[in-house]
Length: 353
Image (cartoon, rainbow, N blue to C red; front, side):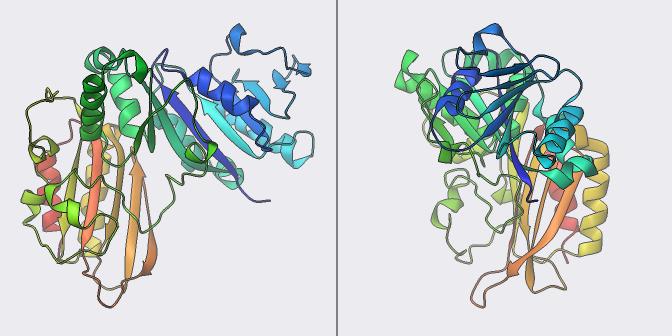
């Protein structure tokens, strides 16, 4: 049986997660979706429901989607769904997990990697974060949960942008980009999002494409999505805090604790040194490391090495071969809470051949 894709939907209270979910569930897309909800408000339960099995708390919708409340922990709920699917008792193509507005998506994501039984049935596709344009500035200022949700995202949807000025939306997008340069952002209205932007985003795939917004580093503008043009950097210089890379003083700069930085080098990494260094860093700072990803130029292999991690969990894989005319270089992005940038950059520099 092929793995069941899972999407984590997160966002602060009132950001529109339920609106987006309702649309996904109600649309005639021909997919059967199982939704696991942390909070099951009465309002979510539609008159469309045909079957309600109160004992299992699984509710069947008219278009074949199913809703399921988390009574025990997520792991047990996922195991129960997988078992029912295997036995032919439930039919569904994918799972969406809606977290509570105050949830940290990290432990939810880790469930898919740490638990062998879950990993044998499910594949984590992506973390989607909804941000409420009207209240985001205050929420991001006051609540670390809101900042963490942004740091974890593979895709950010900005809701309620019609309730604020264009300048306010621009300033918000600019701020979110500092916190998480690898998640595309999109303003959406009333949950009106194409399903292709919600599913199969492959945010946790180990692939050789590391998307960082071209404006994030000044020098990145020329090589985004193309082969590198051989522009080399001193390691510190390429990775200066992103706020310096933007002209114009229109945006108020927020010194959020969730920040990102990039490391680039065209010297090869020494595999043993890098493994020791990253192992030590993850050991100490893992809880503060939200997402990190890289395409690495490693000594001793003709192939790219792709690596990524969530908190303390880190994985790597061999990617495609370096093309003959391609400049071999490493590019890594780290997103975390008050990470010691200097220590990280220095350690990465010392792990080079």
